[in-house]
Image (cartoon, rainbow, N blue to C red; front, side, top):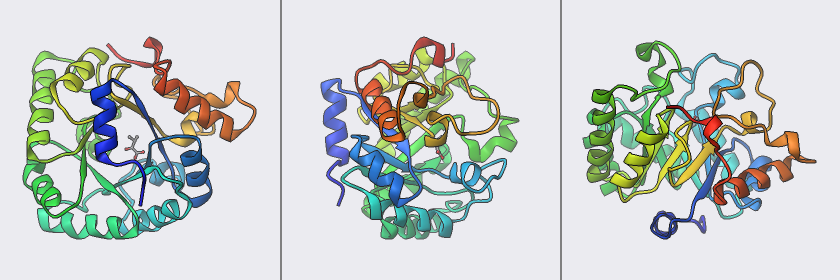
Length: 264
Ligand code: KIV
């Protein structure tokens, strides 16, 4: 059982205390990351890119997510474990129940899924049956082919208004957390204040309740161009444990992200 719960994180939000989230995919890193004081470990479907070498998250299966979730649970020292429901594993509420059950039984404490209005019924059903849900809005990588690339979302007035409405509605449906990816900083701050549930940001400015990064990005080992929202914490640390601790501390002290990591 994780010692960090949704209640813990809700209390942090109410007290104005930020918390740190980082991806983890195996037992060894899970041990290191949870020992460094990262409150939530995300078994992200980003593993399709950083572990498997695909150019998107689409090929990842529920079985692969369950395998990595179990590995992270084996190394966990008290963090909350969030696991991604992968592409096409939650097309209907019933399919979502089966997929989420597999991840919870593998060791997840909460599942994350991408999308807005069409997920109301699914989120209500999961929450009613004892499966906490984090809803992911903004840049949703599983729909990269519809979005036409990995682009900032919510820049025009109507898209921004829609995202605020979506966030409020998903909270009403039963979401216990929200994640905003690549959203203008001002809009992310507005959404964070509009809902009572904790909001995690990535490329969403400094005003969300928490921050998440992909571990390989913050260790500076992801090949290719580095997204604007990434900071390489290895550059100023002697070892990996030091870099993860520096990241967790920087998030909690409000020193990361800086304005240079966000979008207008
Ligand atoms: O899969 C993942 O790692 C994610 C983060 C980028 C938020 O969803």
